[in-house]
Image 1 (tube, rainbow, N blue to C red):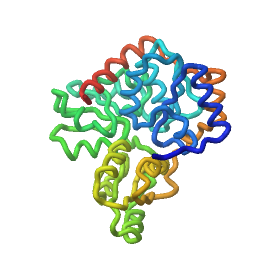
Image 2: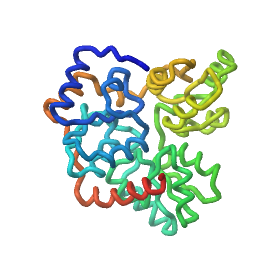
Image 3: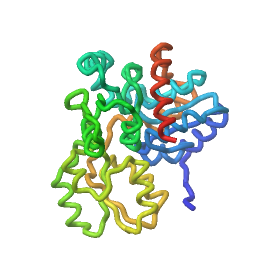
Amino acid sequence: MVILMLNKLQKEIISLKEEKNAIILAHNYQPKEIQEVADFLGDSLELCIKATEIKDKDLVVFCGVDFMAETAYILNPDKKIVIPNKEAECPMAHMLNAEEIREAKKKHPDAAVVLYVNSLATAKAEADILCTSSNALKVVESLKEDKILFGPDNNLANFVAKQTKKEIIPIPEGGHCYVHKMFHIGDVTFKKEKYPNAELIVHPECNMDVQELADHVLSTGGMINQVKNSESEEFIIGTEVDLITRIIREIPEKKYYSLLDEAICKTMKLHTLEKVKNSLENEKYEILVDGEIAKKSLKSVERMIEVSK
């Protein structure tokens, strides 16, 4: 059992949570001090599912990026959803807009639209179904259509395309996560030479040449499960560095090495303990989604969750 030594600010946040009847949801890429005050940590799918289970809380503080907080609102329109720093945006989510999806559908009217959950609500409203990095193949295989418009991450689209007979059409051209694009073959070669007994696990947002060298290509939630269940004692982790922060706390007996120490999502790190406290005290910054957009998006979110069960 890990005993947390909380600082004064963390203790104040925990007290405020009780006072406000609030819950803090945090993505795996949040820094250590925020992970320690969160009620729930998870990847995108786990956070979506958790958001459907929030029944007895009045306030949800979402320590993640904009599309994640929007999804929490879509699933909980009767709850107040706040994000500690309103500048915490996902660059990838902003690479694909609703108009681009409509144009792609005109070119491919026989295609289903599968959107990565890493997309804005206005884009989600144009999708047939959503997916995450952990269930993308399962979602694609669940559809009757043989042609799939898939966005916004091209590497995830290609990861799925390698495993299905269906035609996967990435939209937009060049959609990517800038953090996972940092990893290159040279990083893999260097770390494998340094730690020859380590199991290499990378995220499907990584470039295909990096994926091909990995022992496993998994979502962040999948990475945690792999580490727990593997007989290996050492792991090279190819994703945002603070996933290792969580893994060390939960599975301290093994050894972990970041594939690249500079793999940091700057917008995830915009949340601080001070901002989390302010978010609780002043119920800022509130996330709202247009009613019609939320209604349309809800269908694609719920369909994904149903497929994932």
